[in-house]
Length: 250
Image (cartoon, rainbow, N blue to C red; front, side, top):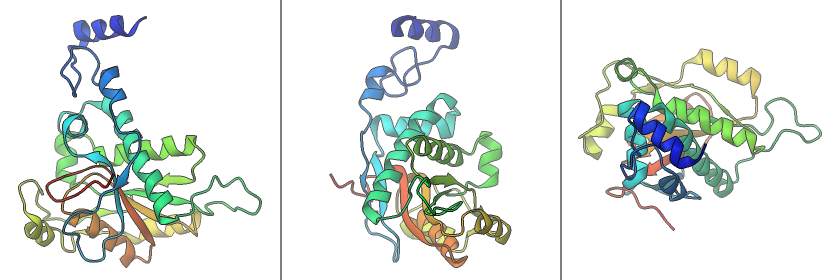
């Protein structure tokens, strides 16, 4: 069946439109998919929180990238998980290349289980948000990115090691100081997950993953929680970076 017929079928039966150009048919039409970034770049928030590790994003939080994130997070358009996972995978690859993180295939002689593995850790969502949306979008795309990278022979795994403490407010509409105050001590790394991980991947390094980096406060808090448990965080990888407080270096 041709792409035109597939799009016509979606429009008739599902009533879908492309999140990028609003063309009837697929959630992401071939033209908008072809226009997505082909590589990621360094994207530090400005000003950056003290001590934050290098951050990377596939592009600016605008246009099609913004609509992809909103479509999955706010409207549960599950068909957008794959393109978002592909974009996050680009950021992880750039982080691995620029930070010198070892994430080999694990096929070499003497490479034991978990040797050289990089663990992708999604920033945790508030339980209330997950219940309301019926989806943890950040975990979903992080899991998908890990799968994409393993297919490329990259030694990565996905683990949900972090949890939010009760009382954390929604970050929408908060400025950088308010976000920092809201998030201080808000993320924890339960010991049970660390013990399991230590048995499986004794020499792992860690990359914090999120859909969007804005002020960097959330990613920095996730980094702090992992480091407080003795884990080595090398980078932050995201789908997009806001231009209001972040710059994407080309």
